[in-house]
Length: 519
Image (cartoon, rainbow, N blue to C red):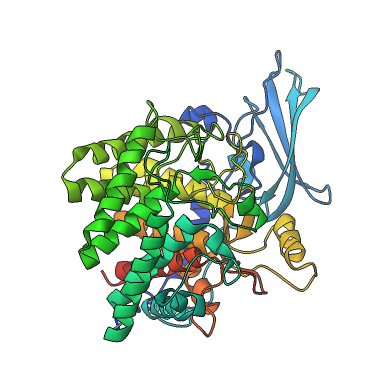
């Protein structure tokens, strides 16, 4: 492997006093305020806030003003202030609120300052803000990615694809999600090829990738069926309950994952069948596109009817797939389809702050019940390129506010770690990032999402704080990388079953950060 120096910015002298002052000041700025941004109250299910929130407290007729009272878990007064609206953010006192559980009450007052009525009460966790330095990295980002790719390549069930490999839950449970798992491993094999100098390994990695792609193509919905040519989200013989209960359904974010891996294979191997398979997926997406742009999130294979009302949020892989397919085929209709789905992110999701968590092992929820940050951060990266820095920064800040844990996990997160291992010996590895409200656990893939977002934000703003945030999470990943090169999915102090797609994506983002540092 060709080594590159990842220390040019990482090891430069850092003025932590200045960075921490700036980071703290930034944490006092509210984000995504309904009455200012023209959006509904999205935070009804929010669990933590790094930045000052505002809540949906309804005004009381004849009230002259409102008193906000914040107390800690012991009932001790932390701060109070008055405002003309019960929906004002907690900005005036936020700097005085320490990390911990907070109970907010809002009282409506008359002209004499007497209480008319208590109109609102809410408990939440005031989360810790960024404050460095965090422990330094243990080794090179590029080297860490290479070691992870090598580990995946050498797994016995991956090597088995050279002979008679197939989807088998007995050797790896996550094979029950073929489109997601195999597409990620194909990408890993192609990434590994680009980094290794071993020609025999390169040959075998290509072979593994091709066999996995062939399996997906052979097991896709048959021609003439409502979802023709779409690869399976759930393996039809799955025994794992989270997959078994969804057999016969396609989650529409995953065919594009497969299509993207086909296009990468076609580019590397020149095999026309992979381009044809990608085109077939693109054509089926055309047939299933909704008039408003995008697609129903989940469809029944047998009928093509929606399983729920949720709609796909365009993400990075689907965007890359449609853009690249348009370029390779010289067919602008794929790009136009992507653009309509992207437009919907702006017109609908950004307008409503509706960042629906879309995961194959989680039942789709109603608006705001299971927020996540991945598609929001995808939109932010595009808005930076388009010159809308203000909106992009707002999205990045909102995502950190809801899903990053710099220190002092909330009681709920501490209970989660104990529940996970059914004992009190586990704890959360920090700093970290959380996946979604419905799985509010520390996941390496979520850490990678923020590393990428902050790396991108640093490139567009030059603000060193964002680079330091990216490095802090990247270094946490490297400190916890296992001796065999694998990267744990769950950032607890005990090993739990891994998702290969997560560690592969994380490794790709480590390479991205390395490029940012060495730019």
